[in-house]
Image 1: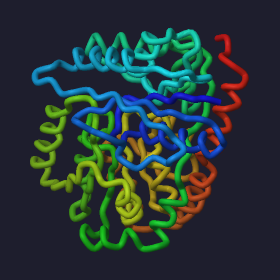
Image 2 (image 1 turned 90 degrees about the vertical axis):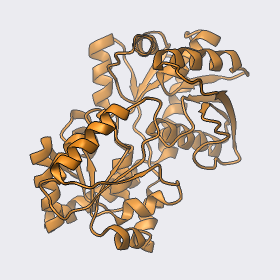
Image 3 (image 1 turned 90 degrees about the horizontal axis):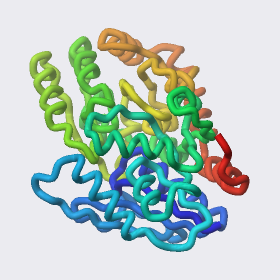
Length: 364
């Protein structure tokens, strides 16, 4: 098959990680794959190298001073729509921006779109983009049954469900090789959160939880995003200062260093208020790191038997403290977690997608 996958960024966000890994799995299966992406800030490539079997087409989005979020959304859609070209058997958008762009360029009638998670936007242009990308594409795929249930209930669509893969060997190898030791030497027995500082990641609650755990270091990694979360970051830092918490904020970590950072953690904290699957948390399980996650339906679905579940600062503080104290429960979770991560392969995810493509667009 000739397959086009489209993603809104070149940065290490979950949907972008998904797009690249899926594209490489398609290529390993012998298909012709092109990844299209919007490239901001002068980027000339993705956050990591992409295998030679995958073609990459980047559409530059030059920065414009003073541009609003809504204006940037509309301009991004228009730029990708004007550049998108080629003959493909399958066109599959991984987010609402690229779905709108391809819908404008080619029409929605044969478009596949993956819904990684659902959002509630206040920016009118983005809210309209989000709605069109749920209603108009011919076929929807969700990465968990919980998200698919939200789509069925809210929009009357019938999405297919295909979970993420995970490069479990990469994170397991970091744990077995001692790649986490330099990070432990630097930060001690640290609690790690990946995804940056933004409302959806529940950072304020995590900071509040860490105030109940004096002496436990908090390390926050990641954070490249399309949106401006400066006011939320200021809220987080103000709350941290008020509580006497001093988080180590690393920002985006080079891809080759991420497995060691994850493997070195004593606890992986995942207080997200919205997720579609929890890829970063699954990577932590692959490295054998205990996971404390919010008790959301989607995360209960994906991580049952492999994690501690919590709600609110007190709940997260209690469960993180229990991990730091050590217990047979966490040893059992680690065994289940490694097996769970190893079972989620990108090749299996690619095979499931290819089976859908061969069957064609379903009728809702």
